[in-house]
Image 1 (cartoon, rainbow, N blue to C red):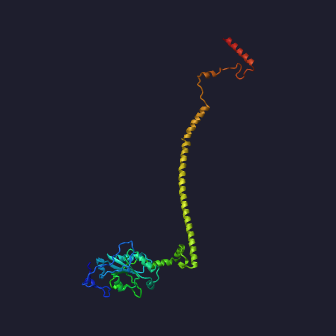
Image 2: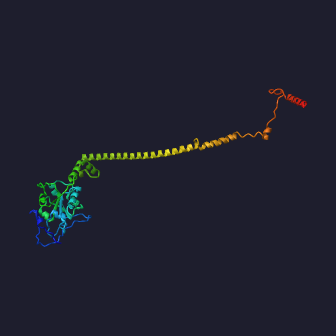
Image 3: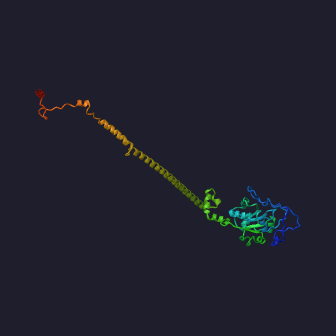
Length: 365
């Protein structure tokens, strides 16, 4: 493919100290073989010393306008971002995401400083250099990782890795005796700023650990780490273990309280159900009782029927007055001859009086 060459306008504003040399128009055109951005996410990014750019084509200097427009078309724009990347977090990932999306076709190289260089200029790290290298390899935005990156970017380093632009936040980074280590990159027009993520940084994470040191020490003792591994004194170890026992007792008491509350809640639910069922049964019982023994109940009719039957059994019906048995049962009227109140004194007298009465009746006839 033909190599795009700058015109006179594009060459204006490029400092003479730039590490790039513009090729002459008569130079033989060579096809670019620069590594392309990796599109697969099932493999980590490669190290620079494993796939160094062996492209023989001249690496022409690009402007930001050209890169954003999509020029050149035969190779990606090589963007470099560097840092310590200790305790790799979302702030690091966001910065790399911005660097990756600066241009339509970006190949992102990430430089990571070694332990010796970091301890010399910045301080002690939590993660060692091997861990920090490997953390960058597994970030989806990174195409290539440069191990043992320099603290200050030299023209030779930029030319070796064919870097077009350097991405970093725009805050002046004073280190290694310089007010801003990216000053010469900005003057060369190769600096592209990114935005920092507020509220998250490696220093913030370390501050949290230092602030809550006792909590983390107790947690790791509980997980099986020794006091020697945690650099904890004998007295503090006993104190932390005692506090862990107290926390366990508190947790047990809390669990018992929660279980008792749950038990009481279940008992209340069951009691409500029992009360509701008892009320339903009691209403049913009262309704059945009233249906049997109420004013218009079934038992009243039963009692009335049985009472009428008993009355009939105790007092039977009288015979009619015209029946022959009644006539036979009635005796004739008998009157005493002498007085109504005094009966005869003896049977002989009674018989005599009876005979006299019959004689008198004969005489009258």
